[in-house]
Length: 441
Image 1 (spheres, rainbow, N blue to C red):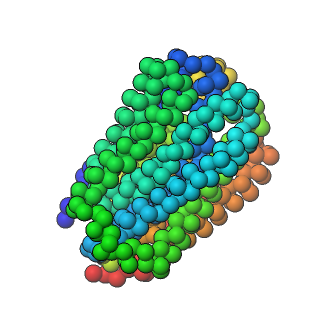
Image 2: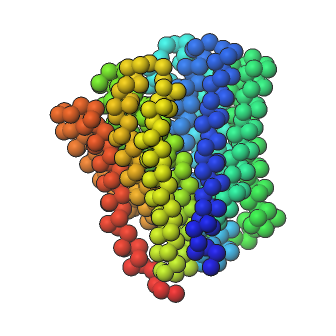
């Protein structure tokens, strides 16, 4: 069976990996455009404003993850009506949250700027960016739902098209408005908003055509009762709220790591940041397999096929593990060559080289948590994901406080590795429960 071989899994994962890897390119171009045409204040404002939107949009990342699992299960169960209803249900949820963000823009904007430690000049520039960029919130959040559907259906090539379309348009608009028209921060925001809205229509066209939703409004009327079925809406909200808590717990863990690193001085903070770039790069690859297992596990779960479910999880995890080993070896072998390319500061280079092997071990062990996250998203067991992440965060900070006290930055990295291991172990304890829910077909 096609779905049961490793090449098929790799074929699904590669477009996701490429799509993930295209994201940093956008930030690089934005930075270059502003850096070549505007002041340091503009560059600082872009960094802080982007941080605000990263936090807001990452917090609503459940619109992508929650949608994927339900879509995959409906596809596996071959329930076309529920599949279409889920698409419209998730679009409705994304549009609603996006509109609420637009309505509350004044409150969100002023509070965000108030919390920033920056000069008045930079804060004013952040506001210029924020009040333009926030107009793209409905488009972005609806697109999250559409991307979740594409992953749930296993249409990863189309996901790549959408991501490249978004980033390509964004780069073209931003360069035009900033370099061509000299609009500075406002040009970056305007270019991003236009790209977000155009991408929504592009993604919608691709998805609706593939799902044969040629007359979506008529289909909504046919499925109105099913789309707004209260128990299903509650289930969607429940899964999404659990994923949101899980995401905030992850953010808190990484924030604690960064904050503790800052206590050891600017050079150690910078060195840890450099090493985290290796961790982030590895996540682009490992996320590819995690997204694939979301779809594969969800479809097998929806079809109630236990043997296929176990096979899909096993094969995708073997590939993820092999990739993690390769990535860890690459960082171990070439890390000391790459570090000077990321920082010119000799002291930062030395510290980063001394702690490089801790990043290697983190990458080596992290694939287990990534894969199990994908499995639990696919079967929409969000409560277990939430609990495992909260447990690992508490364990991380608890052990971290002790190890940091005695071993400094070494203790911080040891506790960081412990963090990802505990996440994987805690999810692994819940895994047999999923198998018990499945019947052999």
